[in-house]
Image 1 (cartoon, rainbow, N blue to C red):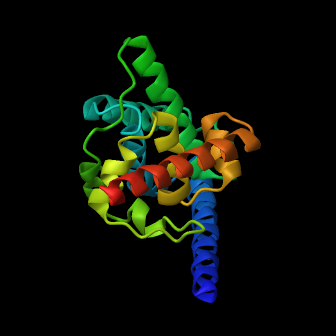
Image 2 (spheres, rainbow, N blue to C red):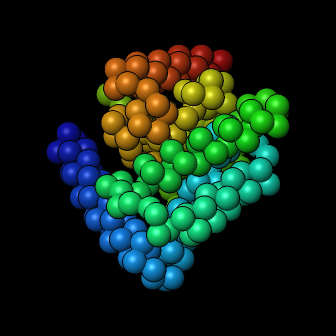
Length: 205
């Protein structure tokens, strides 16, 4: 069993490295003025950014407007932009900052999506529970995971999403959330501890 887990981890890292390499190529082609590269970046990340936005607000229109603004700014400023080593991290950071800024300016409350079943349906290319492998190898269904996630704080939901849905490293999450490595690690551990406690309570009912 450990060998299988290591194989899955190795495969995940390989795929991640390939994606980063493809992103690097796409970004450079976009900077050089290739329209198809711009479209490819949008197709690859627009949906992921919308899902990320649901961590902060259930207002789908607000999220779509924020995603639209990001891509419009990218296109308009493409001649002044520089190469980036991690496009996914770059876009996620931009979306996070844009959504938080918009919510703050509009003086509305931060409230992540309530229906986490809907979250899983939107994220149909994969789901958190497919990647959720901790030391206890927790295996739970979508309904239970949805009910459990809804009880976490927004920041805990966010770190779990980045780590287990997006397969991001602690360094990448730290950059996106503007936290140091240890604080991010601590937040993730608290989130996992809370998930485990909530799951145990549900199973004992």
